[in-house]
Amino acid sequence: MAKVLLVEDDQILSKTLSEWLLSERHLVDVSGNGKDALELLLQGKYDIVILDWNLPDMDGLEVLKRYRSAGGNCPILMLTGKGALEEKEQGLDWGADDYLAKPAHVREVSARVRALLRRPSGVKSNILTVGELMLDSAAHRVTKGGNVVPLTGQEFALLEFFMRHPGEFFTADTLLSRVWRSDGEPSVLAVRVFIKRLREKLDCGKEPSIIQNERGLGYRLQTAEPEITP
Image 1 (spheres, one colour):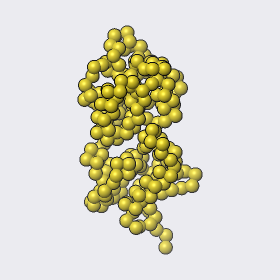
Image 2: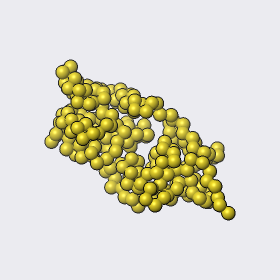
Image 3: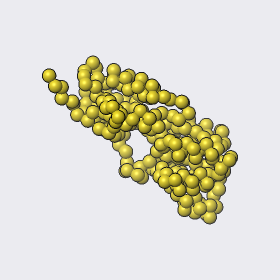
Image 4: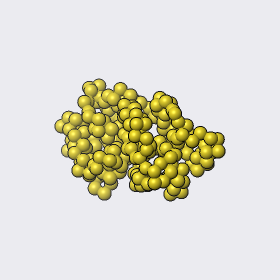
């Protein structure tokens, strides 16, 4: 699962790509113009960006320049009708990680996305294990002690994020930026609600919870069975 920003003003192509990426269990934010896309990039946190060149308000190359100049390091796939060698060089020189000329098959776009997601930290395993918890991201399946734990899509995404960063604390705002879609107007209350749901399904009435909350630090997933003081 990755959080993807798709920047494409062709509504038909945008819908096709978005639906395909969603079917592969990615979170997808969509923007149809350059200025909005740059604002989302500077304010949010994405794992990858699919960026069209020809956009209203601000073209994709300018978005790329400003984002990289601001220190943004998210992988960017340029998806555009511009196929001349000079234009490809221009995009890559300004910090694009890959370049795919239109028309492109949705499967090729998806393959390029997977390849870019592997670059920063190596191939991410589909199977995650923390204590008794095991999560299979490909099968969208979670078990605890061998027993299946039924989760909704958002619950699964939240747990997967925790399991990819075991023992690390995350504030509610950070979780919102990494696990929720930006256009859904989520709130800190939503984080609390889904944390509560996960605890109910994972703790099975035991205390302390497998998901800890420390004032000033945020939430984290326990990496080992906590000791219970008499």
